[in-house]
Length: 92
Image 1 (tube, rainbow, N blue to C red):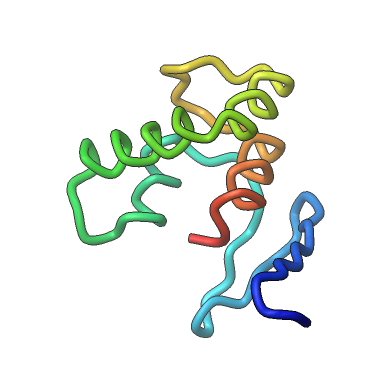
Image 2 (image 1 turned 90 degrees about the horizontal axis):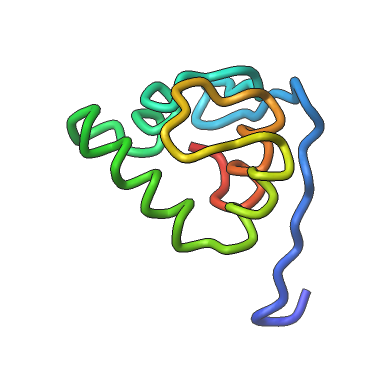
């Protein structure tokens, strides 16, 4: 692989990821629950705000999420929403 080339392997729904001997499963998550996985060392409120910021700043993620019925302020992310987020930002 050349320097600067990015290879992206898209996960399937319900696929498990091995992260430091822990397993991440693409499933339905509460928004705050997923945010805390990405930002474990800050408060729930701050983690949610940061994940929302990431989503808003990525036009591709927002468009893909909206295609799956996402609306800002929802509290439950479907497996399809989680898959889009993980594909863009990586595993938490």
